[in-house]
Length: 205
Image (cartoon, rainbow, N blue to C red):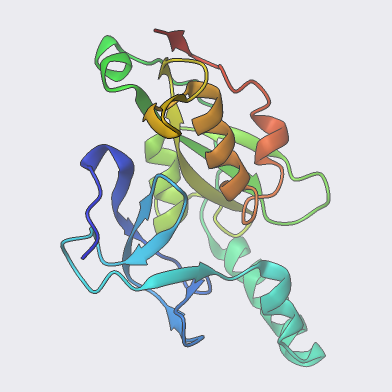
């Protein structure tokens, strides 16, 4: 079992159908956790479950695997399901307000929603509660049209990594946030452009 500090993982998440596959290509639905690098594993935390690596299923890949009739039926079912929901709501914008405790730990967790369809990849920052509603399909969240992601965001420390003998001794705000966005962009297209200010909320020390 690989060890991760509690501040570097997001625990107790629940995957949706058609969100992840395991290394054998089998769909996985169940509890998972995400590391600060953006990698996801089975189990609610590193200490619970086998920690099997999970791979996100791109929407395009899922659609390409369907024959035309199945694809059309799938789209119809999605729309029909959305119509049957009562007062489906789109995510409300949210701006985080880091506390002194957050600056002491050096990071916060930010949540974002992106439209599943279209070509503009509209993104909005959301609250933890809205993220959970989208992930768990609860409280009237419009999960058929929006997907969400949780990201670590460094807010205090030096601007760039500090090294001694080529070993990083302190993680930099810019370098850390850039690395996180590079990984997130693979499954959440547009997030790098949306978060162009790598020093947002930063307190340099």
